[in-house]
Amino acid sequence: MTMLTSPQPTSGDSTAEKIETTGFSALPPHIIESLVLTRLDGPALASASSCSATLHRLASQNHLWAELCHSTWPSTGSARVGHIISTFPGGGPRAFFSHAFASAPQNLISTSTAPPSELISAVDIHYKDELILSKHQETESVSDWFRCSPFRIDLLEPKEFVPTPVKQPDGDETCTDIVNSMTLSWILIDPIERRAVNLSSRKPVTVQRHWLTGEVKIKFASILAVENSHLLCSAAVTCGSSDCGKMQVMEVSLEMEDMDGVHLNGKDSLVILHRALEGKNGSEGKLSYEDYLEMRRERKERKVKTEEALDMFCFGFGISILVTFLLFLFCI
Image 1 (cartoon, rainbow, N blue to C red):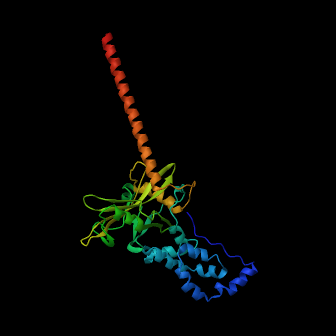
Image 2: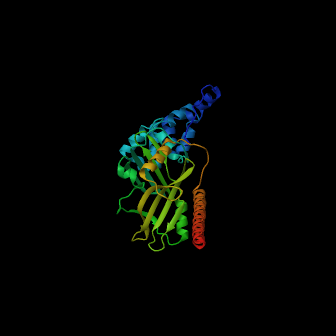
Image 3: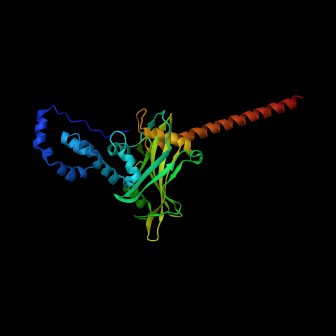
């Protein structure tokens, strides 16, 4: 997992110190903070903190990063989630931003710590930079029902709908606009160990419109590699049409499946998510959603060929047994 870090500025360079006292850093701290630093995004704020000792001190303040986390992910604004973020090890809100802003690690390695007993999902959906859904969901992960059932986190209640300003798609052109304009962030938080990971691809990987009902299913995905295999962690947004011709969000869910398309249960998914929350990468290498689909297609073709070969062997073996039996009868 890529971390946002900024080196401590050195103080041995007298020339740099002289420039600092007469240049930008000579401005009153409250001016720099209120008019400059509050306008920066996370990567820019981290870079600014490495420019000088003054900027490092100003840009490292927790309240700046707390406000940045809330503006980037409004779903983190609840009292409980805010408290968890403020107590993240290694920098509080800044450490959380570093965890949540980076992509999920793909090549996961095993961990010796126990899986979390609770998961918090912080989800934000934007369309053309306009927030259309923001919500956090708490999910217990210790019950037999969670561990034995197929893993699925539903953000909305069965009959809950969220209106959007997006026009209901009537063709491929509108679906392409959704691909280019919609973003989703699904941050999974371990409230006990204070860890977080963003499981979304940010941009949709597929947009499908049902020909009969007109419902639109928008899929976001992350590919996780575990023990010489790959898993698909997908966040799906299902939208229907409202009376005014606009889309309304009907379902938002998170699921995991293996290379054969089989959905993982809660127990197995929790092990994988725990490794992702640990943020420990194995071997380097990124796998795109298209590469994953190609690997799954090739795997399916190999299984079909293996099954066909096995069928032919069984058929041939049966014929040989039949012929042997007939020859035995003929000899008698």
